Length: 410
Image 1 (cartoon, rainbow, N blue to C red):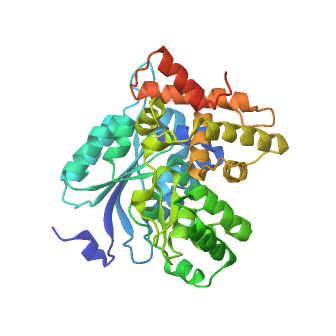
Image 2: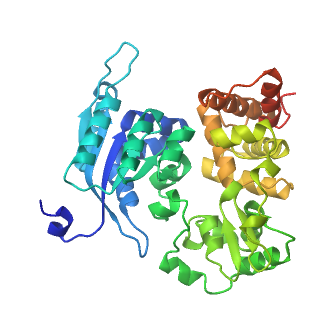
Image 3: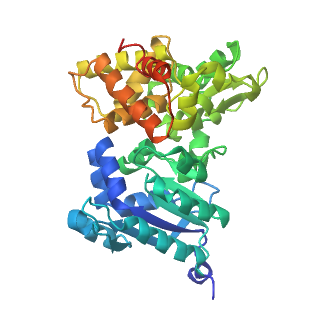
């Protein structure tokens, strides 16, 4: 059979998209209802955003676009998806408990695509449902790239089996149009490619670059990324929009060059390569000894200290008392407040906490207290531990509770 890409004259990565509509929509509603609406009503926008490659990178062609939804609940969205070129597969509830046929239909179609003649290079599964772990394993065994689009907590094994994971906050950013990064910089752990247009902006030594160079070169060792980001934003507040066209702090600081190195490990670290290397980064065990380390490794809970968690809750409660904030502004301000208080945390860590609060159905308003935030977050951590089958004795459970709550529940 002739090559479909060769016939069309359009090169690119052959890709297939399988969307578990119910799972993604429900997850987004808990995080950002506006983003959930855009996901459901404008699939063409975010699909094209995921398809675009960066400079020097191949774009993707979604040869297969399938959406699986419960027609009883979500039939009103069908037209939006068919107009966007998706094949919509009705998956009504088959049991009294409301379990739909999405899983089996999606798996059968994906296996057909894997064994078919289309030569799919990359499979996208839009679902946080760990039931698809075995499917991802099949893709991997067949030497196919896999990307999971998550709108909820992702089981550790499911995450590790995939080549890439588009995290909830990054997917929300795509839906809200607040990210300029191509897919591979969002999802891939490999070194990030710097867009040519943005790179040209970095040639001149901006006040932020000068501040970072001076700060990192004088530091006695690798510096927590949040502290470097705070310094850069203080020197050049305009970077708050999209980090000068780079979208994320990590991408921006990595392109500075001049012996400045960056690693996203453990929340992000920056160092002077003339004096230090990645071997000088503190080991996870040095950051979180004991039971806390086990929790962070298995559940992806940020490896923060109890004091850092405490500061997050205190800063969050203070900001919410001032005035209502959207999630993006809140995470940025809380990150900055923690750095100013001497308890630096990454913005990704704050976003993870906000995501956990959403899963716990905690209302972020001016009545929120630090203790209330800590209680809801701790309940979420305990649920993550339960799902991950972590078994603790009474003393260990107390230790987890004290650590996750920052001591605010004692």
